[in-house]
Every structure is written in structure tokens, then in C-alpha cells.
Length: 133
Length: 145
Image 1: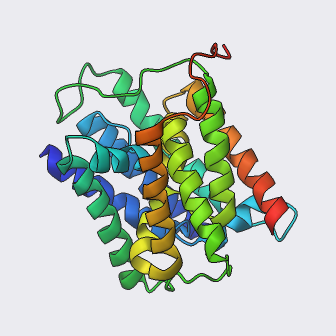
Image 2: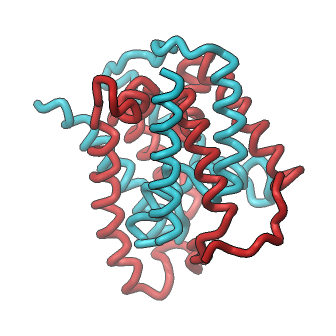
């Protein structure tokens, strides 16, 4: 098996997830948007079910396929993790989406907004990594 | 039925994040670190997810409504405005600092409680600040396009 078998299988599953939510429920599978709906909006049950499913699906496949536990192997300092969370939380709300909403869902919809947002956040993340690591 | 579809979609998403390796920030930083030992796996994940999504969108265009829900709730904005550009830039900086974006961050909050939970709580605080304070720059500035 090539090194990319797992990334490809995982990517197909993520694409399938976004596709059944789109075609079945008519909604974009954007994690930051679903999370904001759960926390700050009135209709909480559907985003809750999705996010609970995400945690269960991840935990179950980790146990079932025997993946390593995710430790802080990068030794990122805690202040950097806190700053990272604040910026991700604020930026995804201001920019209406994250890797899932703009990248996985927006690009296949041929949304120019999502394509541009994806290019911007990948470039700004690359620059950040170059400056910090 | 709609509720079950949300749950099933979440299950697949979580399994996909774990199996693809994207739940592990090391793989994400490995992709972003283009001058280091480059790890292209994120590109393969994205390309496979987008290919499935392209097929789904061909089906979507042929239908007047979704299979279960009553109507489409697809984002309708098309203009490239400041919020999008500044928001995506800020998100990218945060993503690059830790290698966590919201999906893997949520999973890590449960699977690696120290750093993952810290990230996720900070993420909630960041989105709360947006809900309460909104933009820190004038919103009446003209759109870029």
C-alpha cells in the first residue's frame, strides 16, 4: 500500500459525508458553521447530531483501526495553541467558513468565494509555519 | 430521517478525519511546511474529497429539492468582500500556529485532552468574541469587487 492510501480513503469518506449532507439535507458540511449554530443559534439539535457523530466516528475508527493516539508531538507551546484557537474561532466566523465549509464543500460547488478563501488561508498558514517553525 | 442523516454524515466525517491522518496536527504542519520535509497527504485528502463532492454537485443541480429536507440551504453570497479576505487570513494564521482547524480540533478536544481541549476552548472563545463584538474594522468600507 502506498503512503497515500489512507489519505485517499479518508478523503473519500469526508467527501461522502459532505455529499450525503448536501443531497439529503440540503446543507453544507462546514464545521465552523455547524458549531456556531450549536453554540449561538436556536436550531441546535441537527448540528449537535452531526458534531456528536464526528466525535464518535473519529473515536471509533481510531480504536477499530488501531491508529495512534494524538499527542502534542509537535510540542507547540500552550500560548501558541490558545492564540491559534482564538484566531481560528474568530477568523472562521468573519470569513464564513473553514477547511471543510470553503475547501471540501465550497470548491466542488464551484464557489469563487470559497476557492479564494481556501487559497488565502492555505497561503497565510504556510507563511505562519515558515515564520514559527 | 433528516436527523439521522446529520448523525451519519458526522460519523463519516469523523472517520474520514481520523483515517486520512488529518486529525493529527503533525500531518497538517507537515503539509504547510513547504521548505521542511514536505508531507503532501493533505493534498490527497482534499483532492479525493473534492472529487466526490463534484459528483454530488452534478446531482444537486438536477434536483429542485434535497432527498430528505424540504429545501436547499446553500450559502448564497457571491461577492469577494473584506470579511472573507480578512477572515480567511486570520483563520490561516491560527491554523498554521497549531495545525488544528475546527474539525480536527473538536476531535482532539476528546482524544488529546491537553492541547486539543485547550485549542477547542480557545476556538469557542474566539467565535464568541465575533458573535458579541463583530468586526474590529469599519464594515461600511466598500467591497473589493
